[in-house]
Image (cartoon, rainbow over all chains, first blue to last red):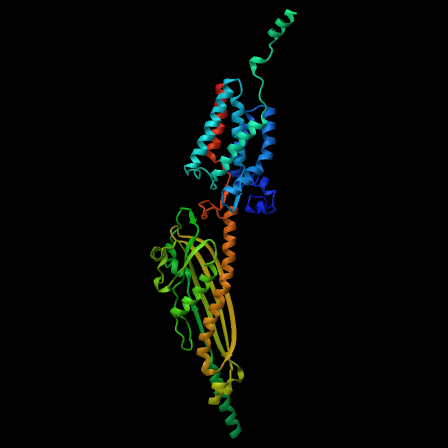
Length: 178
Length: 281
């Protein structure tokens, strides 16, 4: 399989629309793929199954939007990698965890947000090329983070507040009143 | 009896003539002799990566030539300065319109010391303000052989009017492009030509001189086409990651080979987070 046919290039705006999706799937080498795979797998493994499904579905829809943002906002000959989607999953998962009741989930969500902000700040300061094999595109990660926030707001269902759920004791009291 | 003597005399003169008119010349400039004059002390390329910021100022120069071998009908071993400049201008004109080229600087070969190596190349690079230099080496072989009927040169008029010398000019030009600060080889391309023709005995020298220049010019045109293809292939190699020692920054300040790359530091941080989550719970 020739990965050059699937990378995101300006040709995507001239008919080769599949590149809007596939550019996020192809990588330069195994190490590049592995780090991005970890960055997707770890946050998504921390959230519940329902939120996970919603976020994955939203990524399918947001991937071409991120690609179009990159094509309009940056000048490059070729882009490969899933890190924009990883940032989107990262942020959406973090926000989903922050809405949970347990302290462990909230701590994890806060730590994920802190890491994401740290990474974006690091790259904006021009230090993004450290610890990476290929020059990263900071705009991709900013677009990914915004996409993650949008995914969280629009797709993740609002959880029922724990305090409003009828407990067995409430039900017993209500039954007794009648 | 007198006929036999006459025939023997004629045969002897023809054979003598056949030997006296054969000419050959081999002009050569050797890139390896220039860059690595002492083979045992070939310097290693720098470990620093190549970072090319577009548009580039590219220098082009002929590798200093070695002495021409053989009889050359009056043409000197060294290429005249005007010829050298015209040849390099062929290359310059082919590349000056490329969007990744800011300027192509023609460097006269007398600025390059024979056997000067990278030290000399460093000096030239700084003097002309270029980081990338294309070194053009030449291997040209010319021969001129009289046809068997060239005994007709016996008549003085024949030597002036009968084109009985067969000339052959074969030229091979090679351009090797280097990133001088890191002493790294980037790409190479060949160009070649072959010219055959005839000339009279008295015009051999002039004819070979003209064909030498024409052969170089044709080979240079071929080289510019091939070098253009190689430059495109080189760019693709960078993008695809086959030349990951080279990074090219475009006019907008972005690497032409960009990625969504999380990087090891952040991937490990996420894994650490999973371990900490277990501790929190």
